[in-house]
Image (cartoon, rainbow, N blue to C red; front, side):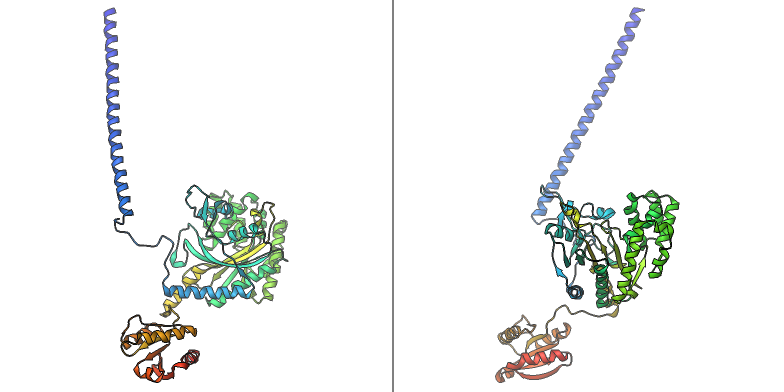
Length: 507
């Protein structure tokens, strides 16, 4: 028995040795594989470094030329249209006594954090390079509030035009970009209720009328009314802002989708969501305010009472400013940004075939400046922002439909020569025209053909041309030509600027 047991133990040990040997073999094989993988990775990294070196030396592969997603280039013709829009808007702002400021396109990340609610995810963060943590500005309102707090400004009427950046899903045909201009008008300071607010709404109407975009309506609401509705429906205050963000999507999504978000994402009971739905489907004017004041559940909420009284006063002032027919009290308007505290508004084009949606929006934000003040000192503010890109898309489409071409320069006179070696005489005349404030140019070729010079005038919409030749030089005259009619008149050289001005007035 003993020898048999010894044989069994030996066999067991031999089996274990074989198993361990197999494990060692497998480990060696795995190590070899890892070594091979490491070598291949090293080769790839070396190849990447070589390609990068080639890029730096200008020997890169073919570059795909395109603008980044959500951005665009603007041609000279587009820029003429854009500058015309901006000039009209600025004229409206100045008419109301606004002065302008400018702020950096990027801010400290902490300045922007916690100001936009759910839209904070759209902020463009800049790469940390060992210094300050920065982000591109999302709008012009928060930087303005930071400016007021930093400079201890308590009263200001300001406008600002500048680019803002949003990491959004762009729809460029509808004027929605990741980089775009905003035109802001804001009034900061402690004033009596609704007097500054109604002026901001009046500014919107004047801008839209000046731009001739067609019929529009300005939707009005009040954050206190929304808070009162939410409270009356049984929503806890901690969810007010998130539900407000959901309601804000009613301009793009049907109620059923918004309701689904409230229930599945925001955690509301279905019957509470249905109560909210009944309220936010209402719109009207002074009559709607009277109806809501009969709602006993709503009138138990002090916020709702305060908001309805403010809205009643606002509509009264809209009547005084002759814009009551342009506004509508709409309970579906929410504006998702967290910083709004009072009246909110949004301008919508009626019958807009392009579907750009809102072209202007804003409201009251009384607590934003206090967020930047060490003593939490608030400066009440109200403002409006016009979306230039959306307005531009509408005007661009209108011009395309009419087949109209925009002049991309403002040259008034082209100086042409009828014979060779006249370029120096052309230059002398140009110097006189420029000194006289006339917008003028000539050909950069010494001996350009007269026909080519006149064709240039016609193709570029230049209204007048001065033609010189040996005959004109001998008599101290020039030939002044109206390009559209081709009518020509001999004018003494000393009187040419005066004659040009007379003709430009008639043209």
